Length: 142
View 1: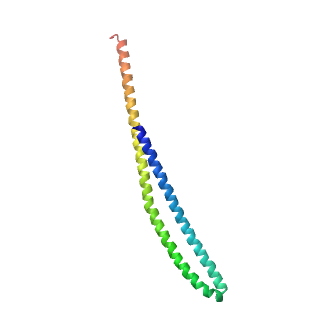
View 2 (view 1 turned 135 degrees about the horizontal axis):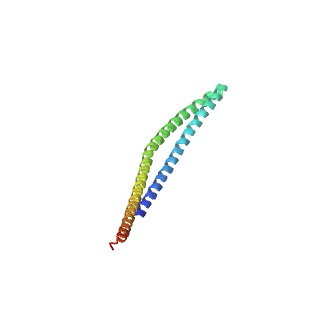
View 3 (view 1 turned 30 degrees about the vertical axis):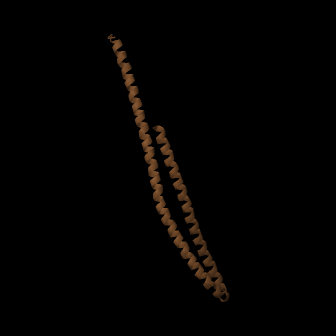
């Protein structure tokens, strides 16, 4: 029985570790999207500077660039929102896995404490029996 609880605790810890790893990967994807959005904003600023310096040439090209940037910004913003929703849902799964692991750990500790208490009780009974035998011999009753 003790081995069953230890195996259960180990399995629950492994499941939690896997969930945390997956959450880390999801957070990495979100960070990449945020960095991509940041890079896009910097590209817009750089392109605006070029357009301001040379308005005759940039006037034709900047309109297409601006349309593409707007579309890409909207797409990235949507992907960021979707990823944040996934992460929020997955955090609940991680919390559930953590709760399951802690429940198994507590059950294992309770089982070990109960086993130790039973062992202590039996040992005390043996000591009491030895004490009673010793006392009756000393009194000359045996």
